Image 1 (tube, rainbow, N blue to C red):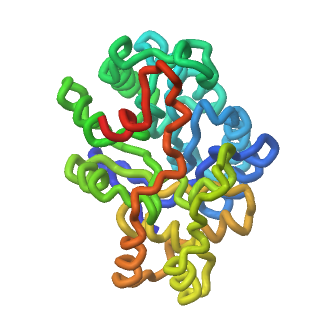
Image 2 (image 1 turned 60 degrees about the vertical axis):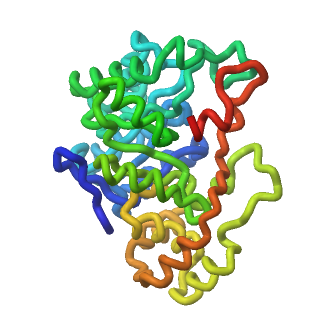
Amino acid sequence: MNQLTFRNGDKIDAIGLGTWKSEPGDVYKAVREAIKIGYRHIDCAWIYQNEAEIGQAFKDAFADGDVKREELFITSKLWNTFHHPDDVESNIQETLKNLQLDYLDLYLMHWPVAMKKGVGFPESADDFVSLEEIPLIDTWQAMEQLKAKGLTKHIGVSNFNIPKIQGLIDAGGSVPEMNQVESHPLLAQKELLEFCKKHEILYTAYSPLGSRDRQGQSGNEPDMFELAVVKAIAENHDVHPAQILIKWAEGRGTIVIPKSVNPKRLKANLESANIPLSELEMMELNKLDKGYRFIDGSFWEKEGGPYTVDSLWND
């Protein structure tokens, strides 16, 4: 499997375990199994509301000698209700307590969206705080302090476009070390990836299989497993289409975090790294790009609110 390298020389496995939508009771077993079969990169977030169970899995894995803490790369994310600089550290401290860790390897600003304290998920415009009231640079500088204090080794962003990353840099902030975004052959984000590579920002692809089990699906979304090109390449290599999608992400020099709680799929996802996709096959997969988002951010768009889908991805 490919490993990617941070600016300071630290390494991260290109294929990690995503934990979004992993249910209570399932996520503990999934994390334990993943570690046993060789996963060393686990992606978490406070808002997933399963970090306490993941933390117990970590504790038991360490106690049983399955892995040492320093052998794991563990990511979590700052939620939107903690964007005020005075609240940033409280969120990571809660995550560290839940995960039963002394430090994270990577901490990301989950969305370029701020909400009022105590709001779980926004129901109206009144639940938001504009970026004029809490500029992203203020939140980012508080994130920088977390790194300075040793609470996380690396910091980055998630769901940020080029202007928003450039905005942090232009405002005097450090260059993020990671950008985690939706990415798959239907949403290759080539320009964003090139920008990240130019600035030595690592790039993580989430929802690489199309977020097939999330709530709020429209019912007429494309099924990437059924795309003719993906199916043909999968048949050529005698593997599942999901493995081709994972290998595409890993093969183009990005990190990818497919989620599963099924032991067979966990193993297959990890083994995707071994599929020898040809240059021609990669080119055919790249031709599928049409800028299609499964996670379009429309849940942040409330009448009279400060955020729109257009401003999220284009401003």
